[in-house]
Amino acid sequence: MHTEVHFLTIGEAHYSVQGPAHPPAHANPLWPDLAQYGVGMLQKMALHTHSHPDHHPGVQPSVVGAVAVGGAAGAAARYGAELLWPTGPSDFPWTILLVNTVGCFLMGVLMVTLKLRFPAAPRLISPLLGTGVLGGFTSFSHYTDNVRQLFDEGSPGYAVGCMLLTVVAALAAVTAGAVATHAALGHGYRTRAGA
Image (cartoon, rainbow, N blue to C red; front, side):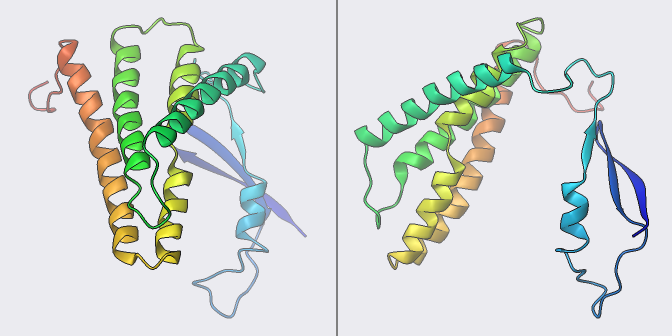
């Protein structure tokens, strides 16, 4: 089979995709055979690094270690919250909702603080605290499992409420954390016209 390399840019990331020169013919061109074409192309997608200072080629054991240590601490904190405030399988999962909301708020605070107050912080701080601790503390996979359990237990109202409330609360919390931190550090958000 003849293949071609196609280039794709999304934001600052540059990708090359190697795939068939011509997609296979299908009875329905609006829904291609993902097993043959789409998924195969996604598996061959490779990130090209460029000169951006945050991109480091290859696996970095120190970053992996920081994320692992932080993730273990964050997951232990979440587990502790679930032990303190347990919910049953058919109850609304308030504990995970609160954990995810608090974690998202803290992520907004952390990222803005690192960018504005500590731009020269050691490079392992963000993977340790952000990806690690807060990534381990929040659990959106646990949230989706709660939604599935609520449907299984015959509580579709709680399930839909949990889906909607978690997404809205998480987005509102990360935004509130970022905006509050900007204001606290004296860097309020400005519109383009007012900048």
